[in-house]
Image 1 (cartoon, helix red, strand yellow):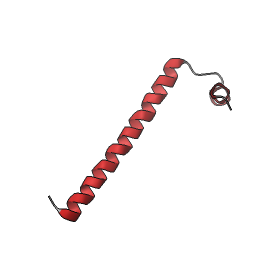
Image 2: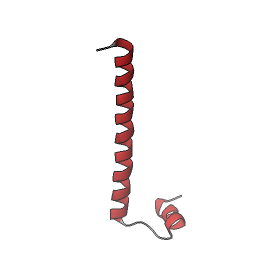
Image 3: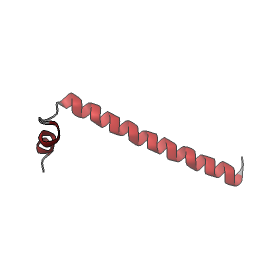
Image 4: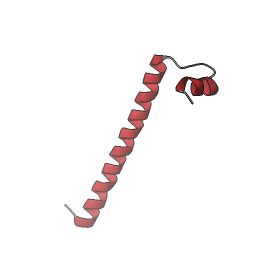
Length: 52
């Protein structure tokens, strides 16, 4: 299924370029947040296991 067809199905019309960019930024920010959370959990595990 083409992207434009899926957009029409979900939103009733294809998305504008700016809407796609904003959506991409939101997804990228979410991915960075998850990566930071994973890094913090790994650091906490290391500190608890081995101390500083």
